[in-house]
Length: 435
Image (tube, rainbow, N blue to C red; front, side, top):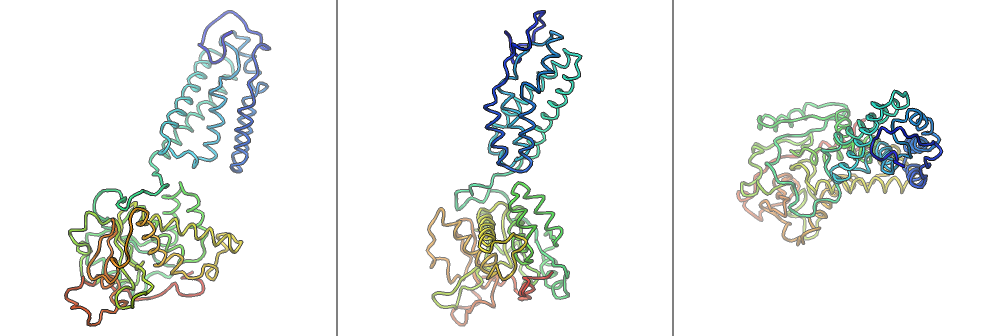
């Protein structure tokens, strides 16, 4: 007896409906069980899928086909019994099927979807039955859904694991000529306008963008929808400085450019001249010491976070993001609260949690996955030093007032002073910033 999965044939021979074996429920049971454990939408889809494929649900349709003697009668083919639950699972939990990592699987699913759709279309053309028309509509929707998911996910990059190289910043042009700022609810003060103008007017060929709370939220939702944990944590955070710190790292990772706090002024050197010519091609990330020279043999050294330069997709910036995410999850567990309930006292030291110390630790953590960095080779710098693809600027470049040079060297031999931080400290209150 030719089955439903066999070749379409116009045969006068009628097959009794009772002779058609019912499809096995083994695969459906296991898949439906898996769907039930994955989320609130998945169980409904799994149940619908299982009901649609049972013999009782298909009985009227098979009976109608039997009456017309047009299409060979039999159970649904095994590939369709597996394909439909997988498709429902993909609709419910698309993050489990990143297209960029599973091209072969996606092509396979498309092929199965197209085959099922074509088969039903032929059945519809061969039959005048309303049930076939309904099945064709369902098949069409399934096929469109597959194509939509492929289109919407095909250009999404992989994030794990991090690129396994100290020189892993993707090759490309120089650091983008764009300056990023974040404005609080109170807007720009007169001083902030002057400080930011000192950078923008000295670099007229640079793009710039002032983000606020709303545009920051939209940016994160739009560009990190593939990481719902990042979106959820960012949107529900109520401590302003935490959101501002996360935003700076997400912006730099996604688009690159120069992050500058609003209380930073430029000291007259064009940004194009900040990186020495011999390092421009290799530098994927540029940071500067905040505390380095003149603090004794064991100072608490850290990079400044008020000025950071980066190419897009720096693995070192992504390490910062992942470490902050892990820190937030740990705090939620420690205090038995939700992200929205985390407050300033629960976080502790902001500088350590999302600020300069977190930035410093994460960069060295990322670099040292692939190389050993003797600390004495990157301390007490008077000139920029390239470590992997990270260019470390001497303290005099980004934080001249925080480093005690004294008479130890002729200042004429130092790297130029590039920016000045005015320490407005708008985040230093019990709320962690402007509300």
